[in-house]
Length: 223
Image (tube, rainbow, N blue to C red; front, side, top):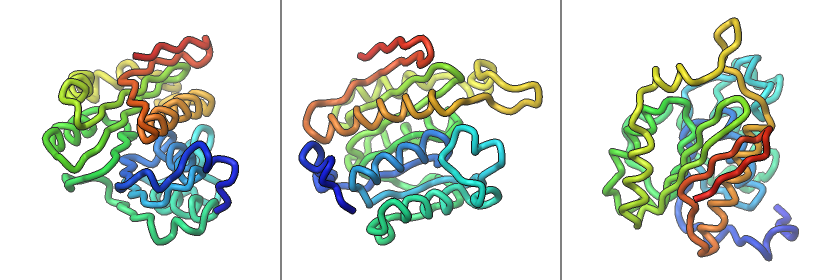
């Protein structure tokens, strides 16, 4: 892949561990696309879901992906962008079920309880370098992150997850048919910010632990 437009700013070989994308829906797939465009290839894709027709409105999947595994469909899209990822991508179409992780973990699954379980299981795992978490609504989104060498950042991330999946669903706008509402601009915006946070971390600039973004009102808070 020709990285001449980005290599001087970001060198992918600085990422010295695997990237785990937990959830390959709207957020996870978009982040994976951004990372591959930066030259990253060692990515594990974890998702047990399949592409539904309504997913095409705010996710990167294509018509031919409907009915297929999200992990497998995303892998095909990433192969088309950069054939070099073929040897680096690992697929987990059954999702995450307690496996021990390492490296950089992107929490993009739409279940807060599962995300909390992953953080708790790996809280003292010395092989984790950072975790980055994403939560989207219709017009706004949040991005949390923790450098795993910083105990306080890990605690803050875990403390931000002290609510149930049902409580989260109550705050999520849905259509009259019960489908979770979501639009591509919100997804793309928070993913871009999260990838920028990751790139800054790799470039030695540290992590922002919390970004709150109201996309359509153009309000951004960063801590």
